Length: 320
View: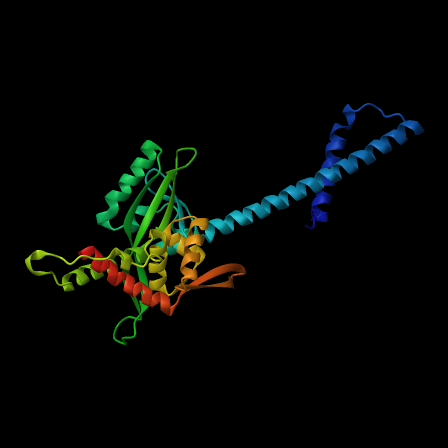
């Protein structure tokens, strides 16, 4: 790391200030002997002091650069995290927010400070958020809730008789995880978009309801028995099923994105994704995005077919 010295102008100003202070306090110093030995000793001491000051200056510059690097790293992690980070006061007003949080709310970050976070939450879910905020500040305990965020998005209209910009209300399902700050005066909240997860759950319920209606029942209400061995053991696991369902919906996703949706550890997810890869249900490729290595998973045609069969077997099993 290259050490940078302060600009020459700053050193000149510092010298002038030091000389002025020396002149102001010169009368308090006793007369210095002008003997050659004494002068030699003073010159030696000044040289040592100069070297010590230069060493201290280099250490301060090094510390300053390390602090600047740490600050840059923190800023990058905070602002460009995939989740929204918000700091709220006791009244639910936003005091700090990262870029992902402002993007999720659809408002520029400079306009969010002092705004009430509750105004972005659907009115029917507002009691859930207020209860979360009250619990965090009252019990100093971690709390979470799932609510619908409402934001206005502007779209361009193709109709010549309609205004070119049309404002549409858009809702997103989010999960809020909140905890109290160390001083007890603020609430740290992490907001994650779970719209895809909720859509998957709705689709799965609709599929189960449709399949259940189509399954014929035996006379007298008896239902034919089902062999649970027909369920695909590669897919029939909570983490593998969640990761595979997400890939089935989006087609491809990076490791970090899958981890965020499944909510598990790196090591645990790696083991399960490796099992799906060995079964040739997914492929794994290495890529570089924004100068960062990424592991990209894609569902294969074999995996696509296996997932459809698994869902059909699962519906039959649940109806039996």
